[in-house]
Length: 121
Image 1 (cartoon, helix red, strand yellow):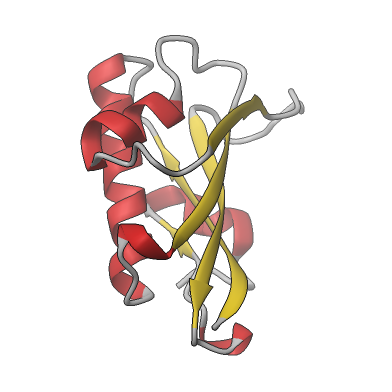
Image 2: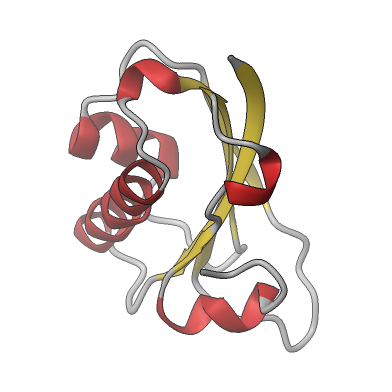
């Protein structure tokens, strides 16, 4: 069993707690599904949010939406860069898996696929 990292991102339509819960839940569910993972395979998740997201913590959304309560979760703010895509939550999840690094599927939902065309699935 190896420790691997999985990246992902999702853009919110609105800065609202319900939207945060829905979109973060969808992102994490997609990461787990596409990589054949369960909650037990998660080691930790680092969330970042763009500065325009002020109405909810992505980690709290993960706890509420997917019941991820026994995994260390951490939130931080993205750099405020002129012209950056607005209302984006990014993740860096550390997992235990037998998948080789080349088979890890990074998940960029919707418009965020443009952020990492090199690894977006």
